[in-house]
Image (cartoon, rainbow, N blue to C red; front, side, top):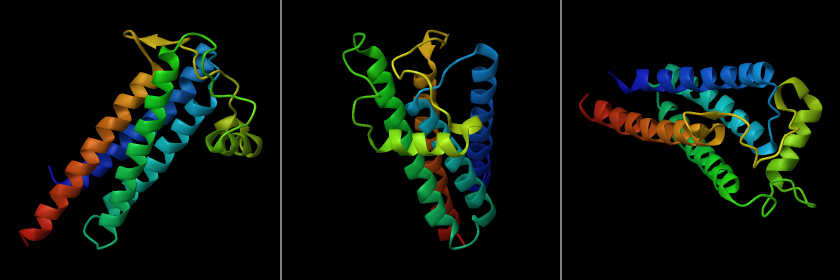
Length: 166
């Protein structure tokens, strides 16, 4: 499998996870938190970047866009990892919605005001209302972002090897 198809796989999985988040929110009547919405945004960005890399894989612009995809996956893993950590803390000890909103909360609030169907955050970050096979949605997002980061790195190294053999 060429590295080009790895980018397509990342894009398809990312967009599928975004679609699944909308279905779960509507079907299970979940209330996404600011960190959940930010992860959704990062999956959207990652899918666009991975699609761009798929189409530009044989051009010089493909590598920098692939690096941006990798950095987005690493950032998503950081955000999801933080939420997993928050969920593991005793109730009310830490919260994502403090008196002073942080940068992520401000971005999510602005997006929620302009596109509420996509980005309205009404839940609490520590909430584990839905567990799948014993893991919270944040833990599953962490696994997806980490896997995407590994596959992105692998695809970048594979592209480097493909260019070197030409």
